[in-house]
Length: 188
Image 1 (cartoon, rainbow, N blue to C red):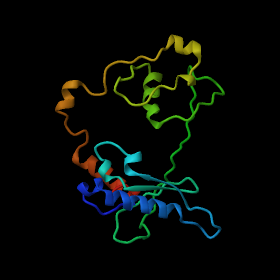
Image 2: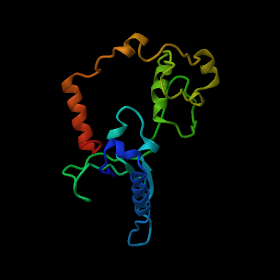
Image 3: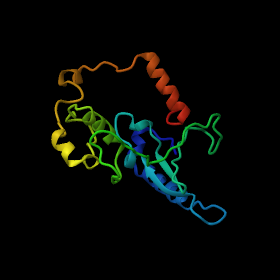
Image 4: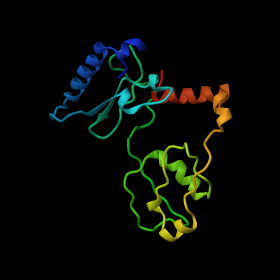
């Protein structure tokens, strides 16, 4: 759900009050059997962060079936998308097999941020100290971990290039990414 408000207005009490009213109203929506349609409503500040946070919706809805609603900005309250693409679920499935991986092991819930450190570790590479996530060491056997300890080192970007970084993508690549994000409903 996007609210029309200038960036400065988003810090005001009127904006916060409107968000609260909309949240309460959405949580009160029931289907014909009396069941809640929306089980959770998250504000932008609760689930998004980073330099593009302002592109995120003001509110994100979690439906009873576990789906997340992705909404395009529009003057209409409800409208059909020309192309429905993608499904959003907060949980995924993780399976692993290979050298050092313990058989019949079940891990507690993990973050998608743990995938990059896990892959780097599995390749015998150092994990950059500024990389988010962690290696799920419980996935590996003790003997294998002793001979292949998790090694930390370096950073994802050299310090000198952090100050003068150039774009990672060229214009054509950036346009392709932006088009895909539009198709998925993340941006308009």
